[in-house]
Length: 278
DNA sequence: TTCCAGGTGGCAT
DNA sequence: ATGCCACATGGA
Image (cartoon, rainbow, N blue to C red; front, side, top):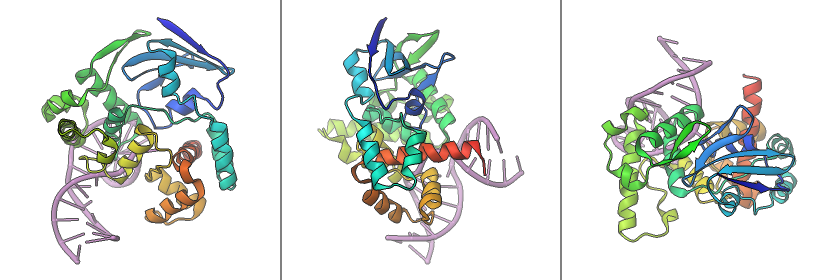
């Protein structure tokens, strides 16, 4: 059990990073630290006064990359607040420690196919159960066993009956078909999967945008879901079905960091509506 | 009971 | 190109 200590970490908050809907496999412990699994490595993270302590498996380089510690988020926040001074500053203040993780592509494909027409607690439950019955055992931490997300080969070999305990609903067939498509793409020599995301079964415009943002770290990608429609209406006056208008606005005002802007705003409006339900 | 959740695919205009 | 609607599941 190694312990990694990283000091002088800025623009960083574990809850805002792990509980903002970009990932689904990290959970808060009673002591305020977070435990979870990524890239097959199990770890616990605690953060206090600019010092990040990571215990478990995986080396420092791996976690630095995953947490995107090489990027200056302060610079991006200043850029966004300057480009859109009306609602961006309070949104940034609400989630000043948000970062976009560098997650594995295949996992985000699985995650966001499951996310469609679903809510975050149930998405987490489905992914947990999927890993438990189809993934590889990855280790134990604080009395809890962790399992990795199944590889495409594994998932492609499963039937809907096999996946029934995961309670995926109608999404089970999308996962299986996507795994099979993924395999055949690999077998036909496709190396750049980023061109193949659109067109996978169960992947429409919104899921594709999430995969680009969270799985390919394309910070310009701007996913539009029910919450974003709500906020674009409330903050900027858009009709809720004017997706094109919202995309143009995001590109114009948030530019290459539209996806990060989306995360600040998404987090912000959820904070508001959780506290004061309409 | 009905509505909703980080929507998509299929089918009808 | 745009507008409906069924789709599984579980919590409010």
